[in-house]
Image (cartoon, rainbow, N blue to C red; front, side, top):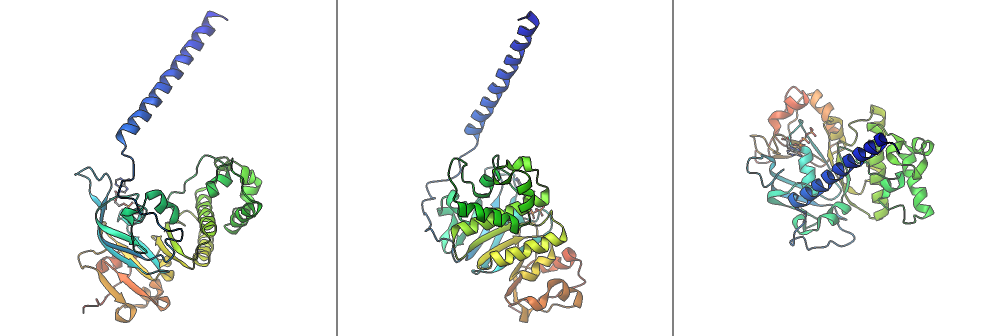
Length: 338
Ligand SMILES: Nc1ncnc2c1ncn2[C@@H]1O[C@H](COP(=O)(O)OP(=O)(O)OP(=O)(O)O)[C@@H](O)[C@H]1O
């Protein structure tokens, strides 16, 4: 071997060693600096059926990122919300108003500074987080792709574990249902590496929907809770309609918490929550109205809200900002107290 070759090998090995040492140092820092989730308080294991009813109750919920940092602002402030089993809640509001943060508190991905959240009567602060997150079906704003096959990404069952023929069929059917059957089949099938398939942003959202459908099917539960954070933000209008139909059909017995900027989504909602500055109410206080109590004026407003389709309780909050948000001429809302 020539001297130059030996020198080059030495330099390469040295560089590799330095990179590895850097990685080890970063892992050590991570372990030292990042506090593990979970506490001794989280000692109530829910039954296998939980949360079958899907009753959500939030009282005085205030939460912030970087909870140890006194300078960081609360992302959610004093939120009170009650969702009855099987209702559909639309959380809407401007960018940065706290919609996703509200959803994160339901998964305990954002810690509470104060307040309490219960689901079917169980206080979320007492439930081990992995149990909570595995029971609540979620379609996140940014779809997650894990390294591994399509099959693994759909079920999180490691490839070393056998999957029954029925389960394989269910996966194929579900991919077909969301419109990804052909794409996945042509590019490696269930065994193909998901990242190699190269799904577009919208296709990733369809894949997230397929994952949620399979999660619900595998639980064989009658009900539960589904959290959908902007699930259709990257798909075209036609695909969005298809996705909404699938959600309506497949999660009919579930309580659905849907985050969306799109007012069309209000047509299927029992409750509409408008967020602004992390609060559910803005200045005017919470106004709880039933349709019969609400004075909603103007055909434009009625058309936009699909008023005729509402049957449940509508929670209009921060009512003064509705016209700003949805560019409607004027809205008057009568509070229950009036
Ligand atoms: N990871 C984070 N770290 C610190 N602050 C955050 C983080 N994520 C969001 N925030 C802050 O929390 C507040 C609420 O953000 P959130 O993402 O809940 O808004 P959003 O209404 O869902 O917005 P969008 O419509 O853009 O998704 C904002 O002030 C935002 O800056």
